[in-house]
Length: 267
Image 1 (tube, rainbow, N blue to C red):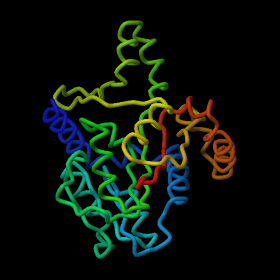
Image 2: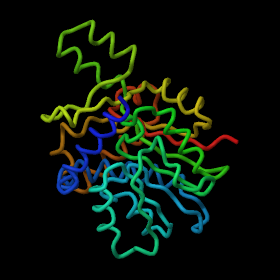
Image 3: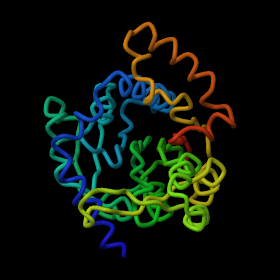
Image 4: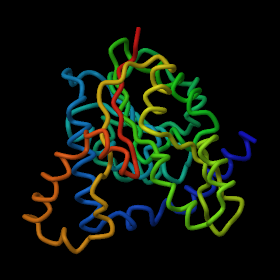
């Protein structure tokens, strides 16, 4: 099962690597990415000599930001095609970048206790065969005071999907297991995704040897359905201010489609 999942995840991301960035270039994603980066910035190592990790690096969007901020960054992805996209994006910063093709559940080729920060954007941990095993590997790679900033799918945001299907048993099964599927036309590219409620995610991190520092909902305002409101830069700033007032509210976090959590390795 784990091998089948790995093959599906790799096959899907290999296929979409060349067009992936084009799907995330409008006003909404600019707004969304600004929220993401502002949260990450609060946990950047104070020492620029501390190397950082971009896990599930995709096309290298966050790795490029980290490298431009002055850090040496190691990009890790299961998809070789995504690694090549990332390598191209960081081609003018090669002295600051390393690239590793690996499943997050097995990064044994990498030296431990090395990285002051790991980011895992786009829910790559939830796409593994075992998020707990992936977190164990990530913890091994971090320094004693290293921090992980990662996103996960919010289980609560999927309830409407199962309501629309009208199958109470299927919803009950989803709520018990917390797993849904990434649906594509090619069945060989379909794979399960682990989802969590905010409380379940805190427990997962704590049981995996981390101390939770912060969590935001991303995004509480469902702006992907109201992209027209973000057309002007001044309006984007206004809606950003509203979002910042909501994203740490316990009830607000439950509304968000994703959870972005920061946690420090516990010694």
